[in-house]
Length: 448
Image (cartoon, rainbow, N blue to C red; front, side):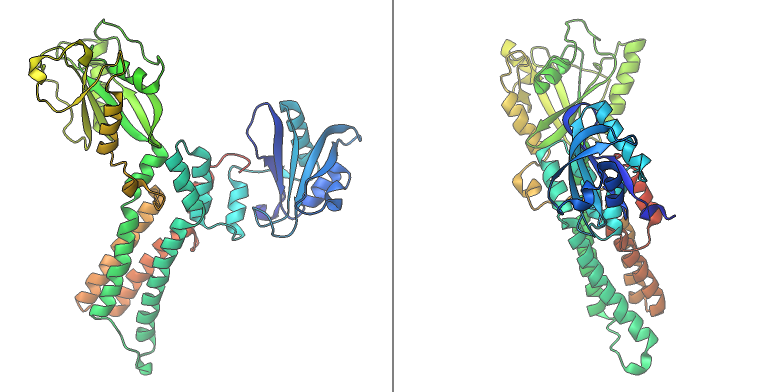
């Protein structure tokens, strides 16, 4: 039997103990399986209306008193018959209800299989299916907003429009090649290349959101670094609002990196506290410094903490110069500032009193360009897979453009345009991408 036509069942709500748990059954025989389990309550239920029923075991004993909702035909999330069972949320009762469904003909759903079926039945395109996972894993308001935009088809609409424009180009060029007797205008001059340029410009606009998408999904990797006792761990605790890191006057207290998440203006910051940087370190502390340098090289944002009460240090330990965004924090400003720092750029902060914290937040916002113009409701943020597809499409379009400008055989340009079209189609799942589908849906949790 084709696995895509089998009836599947899984817990669709979170694991653990709760007041209510939701179990989803989907497939051609979903209603039949639910009938056996509930004594034919499913077939008697009004569609899309919660109906009270009892789940019974093979001996006729009641397992639980539940509510069932039946979705017939293709009028469901998956595009096939679905029965949802709301039972009590205890671990044992949930396991027994699900086990009974499996006894009566359903099989356990694989990770992401419900959403995959929704895609296969045309309820979602591939970008919307990915948005379901983004919605589940969103850790900030902006990430949630971007996931909703994608779930509403924002990325799919834009890529499909580009694809339609490209289909028109391919059709025109191939018609001219295949039917020369029809006197079709080849349109392969400046106008045709201008149309290619228009598609490439649309691709470029989407590619420009890749960094924003990565930050929304993974967070801004924010590395806190500086010399020992400058207040790095104190800054981590201040930003988190809790005592996460050990704070001590003893140099070298932090030997390894500590990572925590905090939300700033709707954007997640992955704060990484690191070992202090100094020349005379040895042993384990030297290894901690090596790790600090490695983290600094990977950082999206560096928070360089200085002790404002001390002279500006002369050190041979240099931070990486490839950091795109750096904010200098002059800590201990409440204790008086050394003359070396007079006129120096940097945020004056007291981790003890919290004075200057709002200035630091503002400096981080400015460093990350967190204005509404960059992160507004209109934003659509592509993911890594979308980026790779768009890059391949753009490379093929560039090749086609060059072939046409060099006067090469139009058949060669048509092949490149076809390659570009296929790459764009992969984004929304408009081509046969079995391997891509498997990789995407395997990331989902069971029950989605």
